Image 1 (cartoon, rainbow, N blue to C red):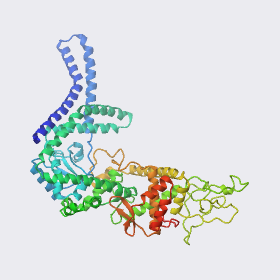
Image 2 (cartoon, one colour):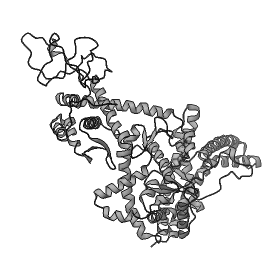
Image 3 (spheres, rainbow, N blue to C red):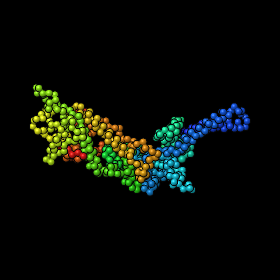
Image 4 (cartoon, one colour):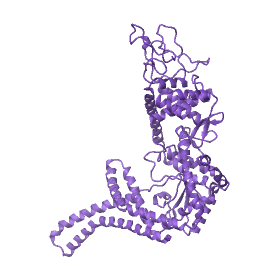
Length: 625
């Protein structure tokens, strides 16, 4: 078995290869200057004849250009701010037990202790070098005696926040052992220099990619080309160097809680699965509504407990959950959870950096009422708004009487709200009247609109008996339209997609207009070098939903609204599936197939049967937002 020193030596060999690339680049930049010096020295000493004057001046001009370009590249690489992983810094005062655990672990591994600890809303842990001068105190805060300068220090330990709430203390120590062991190779001068060189080139590429304007962009694009060329030359050596460092760290940590480390690695996979379901199914609906769950890390424990129960692993986890959780190492776990939850919302959804009127926290107890119910009603209102604006359609009618023309009153087109086709585009369905029935809403012009009719009947002529008032927002109207008109599904899906895309663009524009630097500094979040300047979110959770998926979600929301308003159902929260409909206190998870049957095939039979079973009255108006 290879020793840790073997891995360090292999990493050092690759680091020297990276540094040789840097030295080669410097030599190429200095070569014209060296040639010019030789030519001028030879001419001054008389060893070269007068014919070498022109060559000397050409070499001198090339040397000046080369040195200027080399100085430009060096200045950009040196001043470019390497990216930092977004994280919540944890001071030693707020987590003395966690710092003590990490220092004891470093002492057992005989490596330097990390200089600081930070949390990130992700299921991973790593070491991050934050010794770049751009990450130190501002220049105006540095004292002349140099006390304000950043001294060389060990990297920062970044820990995934879900680990602290799901894992036990012993499991966290075993999981962090190989990570903390990486501070040993990181302290080697050659490895540290190679890493700084690669990170500087990467930062220079990022700076050149954001360059704007011809005057400033042209030189920065040149710097970007040179940096990419050097990165391609050193890519293979840097990859092998990092692998060797990881192997050396893992080998050093072999004798520290090896058995527990196997168990902890199993918990990493489980934590990742639960964290992903919690973000995509539970947190994302709230983020889209301008609310952010303030206890995501506490919620992941409930999600993983539910996942283990469904997978019949509850017995094994019951005894494990009785041990001390790693979040007890924090003095104020609630405050840390809140900061990590806000950072997760900013990373994965692109929300503001601090709470506000349109971006407020929500607790798990209030989630069903303030998020689930409101989400359903907002989507139901959007569905009705889109259906109201559909173009006119001709419902199936009986054969016309002899002599009737195609343009007669019996064949007048009907819109979703049974108003003339030229009704205003923004018209909403009539609200329920005081007697519980729908209120009369006269059309803008033309004959009064007709009431909802059976499929095989034609609307009465304009000179017939008075038409019934238009119904309010009911589930029956949605089902009838999607079932009767085979083109309605595609048209509604397309318009829902356009509506949602428009709302997302407006939200993105509002977020781009907000300031970032002052807000991030206020909550102490380390963002690095403008990684968020290209637009948030940095890590979108889901690809854009298709029109059919949006239509299915909106029809499901309309069904849930009708069930809440007419059948006594209640909104609920499922830790793995998100918003849930509770009927008699039990979750009804069988709604998806009937809705898809209506949306995809235009078959309303399964959904009508489901509504009858639950006791939903689709003809009753529902309350919209």
